[in-house]
Image (cartoon, rainbow, N blue to C red):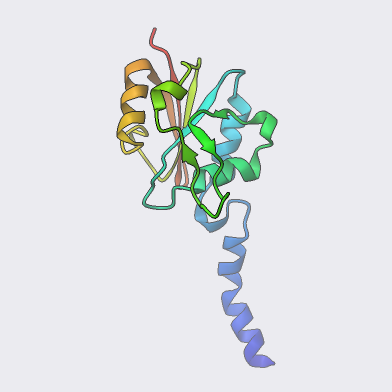
Amino acid sequence: AVLVLVVALLGLPAQLEIRASDGHGYATRDAVAAIAEQRQPGDVIVYALWESTGSWTARDAMARYVPPDRRPRDIFAVRPQRTDGQRSARECADLEACFDDPPRVWVLRHGSFGDPLLGLGEAKERLLRERYTMAFVHQYRGMTVALLVPPG
């Protein structure tokens, strides 16, 4: 019994950190809350399909912490993630055809990115750079949020 208590006490700090509101050391809740608070009608969101740290984290955070009516539309998703035995979402094969020139585009990345479009995916990056400018980029612990707006 004493051994079990010692093991439990040794693991307590790690358990508290993992179960904190921003578990696993990433400020996922803060990042998506910032988007939800500033979202405007017509806003959309773009995610990377592949992140070295876990491409599903950004979409999972949005789904977990933001009610559906307060989320920007996931413009490229044609199948949600974690369906049909797939961890990642399926996105439109022809990004241009799915993109309807929304007024503002949010980018949510898992990781810290000075340029959140870099590594987003060649086609997405090109499309967004051609049509939008970066209004701002905010870093949260382990997460990057950017807002893109039309130039001018």
